Length: 95
Image 1 (cartoon, one colour):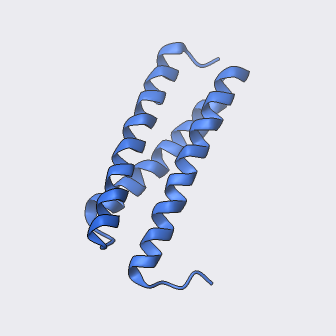
Image 2 (cartoon, one colour):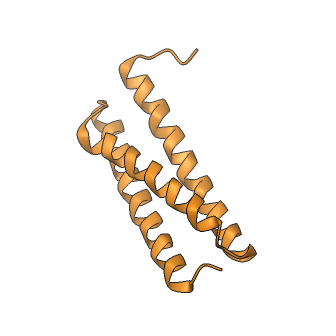
């Protein structure tokens, strides 16, 4: 079972990374540009946090896994939005 302290630390990391990525997403949307270093770094942090959640899930109990799953879904949704927005800024074709 994952310790309470390790779960709390990971949840705080998730919240911080999500908040930063949301800020970068909003800023990029307002300025209508993509691929700046902060935006790319935010996407990388989201991916690393996603991987950290997956690792933690292996030692988590049922309630903790549920909490991790909900956080993982939030991260995935934000990643998808940022990637799609980046495609739009670059005029990329998703097909």
